Length: 36
Length: 219
Image (cartoon, rainbow over all chains, first blue to last red; front, side, top):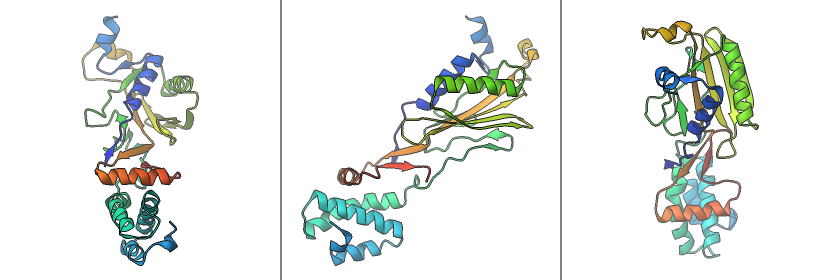
């Protein structure tokens, strides 16, 4: 049996939370802080 | 068809399964197949029941039955992802389940936890804060968030005052809070790929409104 995907719901949820918090991804500080 | 109306062959076949659960599953399969087919315990009933047998056996031995995703902090870290669940974790090793940790900008783990709580509850009004615990290693948060199915998803955060070091980047001198997390679906829904058996099982599911292919991870 194969698990049915949730369509990336978990990742989308976390992405929206991080966007709301405006917290940077570790390792992406330079890209996110200085390219905007 | 009621189980009392099953033919002796079907009843003996069900008893041969061994466990009560297996008998119930197979019995359910026989019932649904009889609803989809003839009304007498004929060869066609037994044939249809035989079609359900592989599915019923798979359900009885399914790795998803009675599986509960474990939550909480272990040795100061959040858990990785069970391979069979829709899940994202900063501790996962597979590329499709891994997500990079965040760097919170608040001064303390408690303040960051408060910000995260506000963010989660504002974005997902039906989310429920299940746990908010200050730990020696930081602050742990756990939410129940409505998911794709009726069983809520588990969303966890562990915010630690460790920051990031060792990169020789001057931005790290400002500190920061290392935020690890995990989001795991509370339910696994399985696709049974067994051709005609799958079709037969779908008829079983339609006949049994209380259950579906969904394997709840909680009792």
